[in-house]
Length: 320
Ligand SMILES: C[S@@+](CC[C@H](N)C(=O)[O-])C[C@H]1O[C@@H](n2cnc3c(N)ncnc32)[C@H](O)[C@@H]1O
Image (cartoon, rainbow, N blue to C red):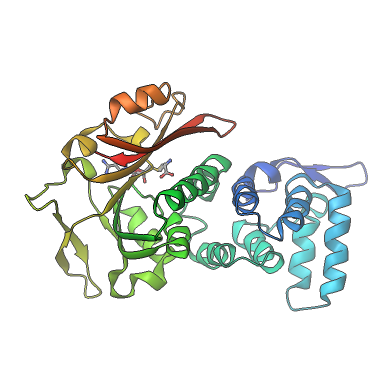
């Protein structure tokens, strides 16, 4: 993160860095997650976000008081630099350091996981897009609606099409019993990143990512398909997948071949949006009626939309 936009006051000291807030955009998404899950430390996080992103002096005062209360630790100097970053021109602030601070203030295993994962991936993973407000709100919404449908909390085998870094898998493991969770991603860069986030479940391949264009899946008569997974010895092993649930939260990034190919009777949870302006989106929908027409289900269990501020997100859960 650069400091070029730190303005200098007349006496040469640094004043507010307006870029900091933009560079730490992922902080909005974490807030969304804490709000949605009614986390007990939500108020602390609101303080923290306003101090770090916007340099709000009253929130900074609260954080300094909390550090006095915590007492001196090996990380105190680092934490003070983060809290005061807007004013002292802290050269070394980055995603990892802020996440480490957040993980120390907010008692959440999910945030601790993001923090430890970011040590390795902060430069290769796009945290600002992945943990944006819209992405986080959409994922929380999906988990909540799936909970309404799967009252017995058993999902069986999940195939997540275009699952990206598949961080939502952790929220799903937390809420449901899952037999296997496969992240089928066309982008090889995502494989290691998502496996590392879900490393506890990669043991025994309860969670596994693999390179797969989901438009080209070849279904067998028994409603299963084969994928190739790289094992620890770097050999590609053929694995048969018979999904009980297909999740696709990336419909706006691909045509409908993936949906047309899946067998009748398969349960699908899909999300798409009306964010036509985003150049990465090749297949948006105008509204919910458009979604229902484009992805016809035999039975719809849930259909709905949410406003994510930047765009509307649509979700359809049902049996094809
Ligand atoms: C930017 S991301 C995900 C956005 C989405 N809103 C979400 O949260 O999951 C879109 C992902 O879809 C993946 N993708 C696009 N087309 C695909 C395909 N045909 N097969 C598998 N993955 C695909 C991309 O590689 C990318 O990781």
